[in-house]
Image (cartoon, rainbow over all chains, first blue to last red):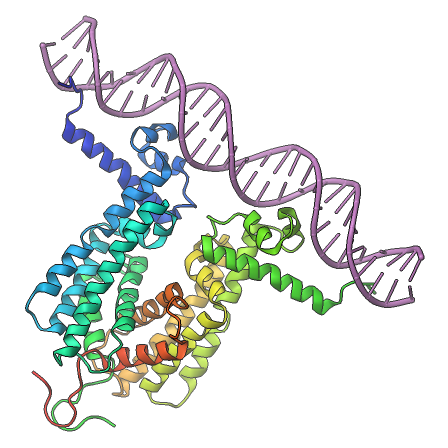
Length: 208
Length: 208
DNA sequence: GGCGGATTCTATAACTCTATAGAATTGTGG
DNA sequence: CCACAATTCTATAGAGTTATAGAATCCGCC
């Protein structure tokens, strides 16, 4: 029977503020380049006070990274399980991958850049999640090729890596060019990857 | 008239070894995560001895980053100035971008990951070089669209960022999958970006 | 209005890291 | 074989960082 002063929801909100600040600072300076002092400065509290919320800087990184990967696998699995044609699935995968960069850019950025600095066990854990995510995407491509909906002879492994690299890079410049929404980027990336740069023959024979 | 003990070429070779070691360590641990001690360990010398070769850790980063950008602009400019059709130019740009990842992977990786940690002046300098590089690539795409060799309505800015993101990501996994040569990757990436994932109509009408 | 847990603070130990000073060593050309 | 510059070493100053200990403050609730 806690005679709690602040309500549990308020406490959770405060904890989220702390991790938000950590994510912002890690995203800006990189995990190793950031000092816990920098996080405290953002929050206007003392450096030592942070340790009420996490037991170590590494633990803070872990929390940030966990929110950074959150949802990717679920979203991709749902898309893969759908019954749309493969090209549409690819469009959905791209949008699903880019959306978190709008909603929690700092978290995703830290995950992509600094997950290697995680302590061994959690690094292996997020490694497994990442690999699962990649396999889902690759699976969509492979099924598409088998169904004749995607180009025969495609190297699905390299295509998966290309797709992810293309999308992940957006975390570095999204927000810099205002007016470029995630939907717009997803749409353009989808056309790029599906249709290619070379014009399609529009009815008769193919270009030379 | 120096009564030099080691010859000038030998001295230059040694200096290159030092920077090689710095590049390798920075690539492995990240600039902020790496200690000068780690570089010394690779070389089998004492940490303080490094300061005979560079005046500060930042200066070492600068040397590494300079070799990391080296050649990109020149290669791209030469390709852009050629008289091949735009699709072929895109293939050449991709290959030209990937090749340094084979020949000096550590340098390129450090440049891509840690150039933000450079002191202000040199950061702005490499920033200008990067922007020039991007403009050259974007220029090739724009010219291709104007010539009707690339799809009309293409967002050349986003396509440039997509292309670079896709290629840059390779620095993170190239070498992990043995047997995947740079030429192979460049070829596959070229096909992906030019032809797209969706099969081309082979003679008659387009697929539904 | 004051009890008691939640939250933040002060102070500092312990460690790590960069960089400098100056001594020691190395190895080649004369 | 030795003089002397090039190279590496020892030793350490000095700054910055993480994390702990324990005191102080805050604030909803009885």
